[in-house]
Amino acid sequence: MINFELIHNLISQGRLTHLSVACGLGLVLGIALVLFPPLWVLVAVAVLPFSFAIIKRPEIGLLGIMVLKSTIISEDSLPRIQLGFGRLLITDIILLVLFGMIVFRWLVEPGFKINRTPLDAPLLAFYGLAILSTLNAIFHSSLTINESLGEVRMINNYLAFFIVANLVREERQLRLVIRGLLILATLVAIAMIVQYLLGPSAPILPGRVETLDTEGQSFGDVARIIPPGESLIYVAYITLTVTLALNKFKPISWLMFLQWSMLGLAVALTFKRNLWVGVGLAFLLLLLLSWGKVRLRMLIGVLAITLLATIILLPILNEPGSKVAITVRGSFDRLVSLANPQTFEDPQSSLRWRDFEYSYALPQIASHPLTGLGLGSSYRPFVPGKDWAGHDRTRFIHNGYLHIMVKSGLLAFLCFFSFSLVSLWRGFKFWRQVYDRQFQAIVLGFTLAFLGILIGSFVSAMIVKSYWTPVIGIMLGINEVILKFWREKSRIDQAIMIRDSTTVGSS
Image (tube, rainbow, N blue to C red):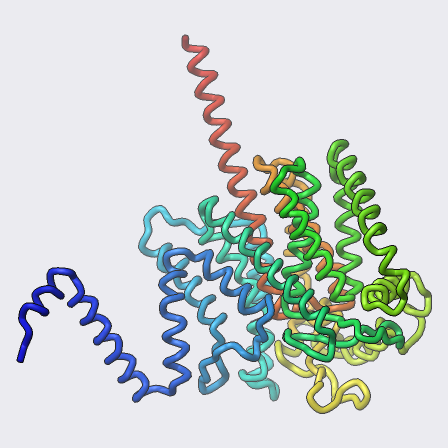
């Protein structure tokens, strides 16, 4: 028997509509499970709400890309949609949605204009030439679309630069992306510290978790940890260093100092000398670029931290067998190895063993100077002793610049070089003129971090790694947005001054 009173109560309370929507969604989900594979339905259920959030707040999409690409999530574990020629990852879908938003808003919103920057032309030229070289290889060699997708996806991440430049248009959006980047980096640092305490025998993070080894010397139970989030912790550590140096110390700075300390420890636990060199170079340049009070503040900070570290570590170092003591000794040995001639002369050293890559890469550049081999192509044969089952690196070159030359040609490399040079020039030239001290620190911090990335890419191809390229694109896009805000504020201030002077003159 129908209970009309119950129906009346549901209608009056607005619950009948909610119940109808729930039933409708359940019906749609059931039909979808019948028609499509369960994984596709699961991805759709996860992606659709996120897509609505991205449409409302596109900066959330940028943070989503960093979460999935550059934290503690393995790209191999991401949901994917199999297509006839390859597969789409969820990060690919996010990029497509964000670019679709740019096109849609440009077409329908009268006031929406494409923000142009001096970096647009060289970055688009680099990207276009890389894609053209890949298409040429697919049509005229044995390279397949599926083989090329990994490296194509890697350079697609650079296009996050245009998303930031065109969809981050308000200061609150900008601050959310910056704050999110720093928070994500801190979470990665905490995970790395936990992994260090667990040791290399109990890996919980993706990437490399291994026993520390320096020039053939092993350091017991000390874990060397290199997760995908190494990019975030490096960029965030340099940026927080600049922020602490440029701003007066306040009560909230203690929390920032704790965050900075964890990020510094995480950078140390990678035991990557190219990152350490990048941090050292950033600190020296910051000293040179800063003014009197800031320089004095930095020197006092260094002395205070050195004294504090000495007080903490001395009792620990008196126990040579402790894990911390072994870690400190391993770090010192690894750092000192940079001044050891054997590191640069011994063909079996960790720096020189990859020299064999040059003997294959340089002839390929000479044979294909303009078009390159195409993204995803193998540039050398399988080399016993250098490659083994499950470790085929015939497509990878440790020198990132050689990687670009071999895969995309010399013209693409020149475009990338121009893009890098212009971004550095703009950062170092204009950072002092930014109106806000925090944004000023961001511009300089990101510029110093990018310089370290470019130098480190001679030995570790950060500029062509899928967990570095989105961070590079986003941070350089943030720099351009900050510089745009500064120019707009300068114009407004100048207009106010002209108006006020005119008013005074007329009176």
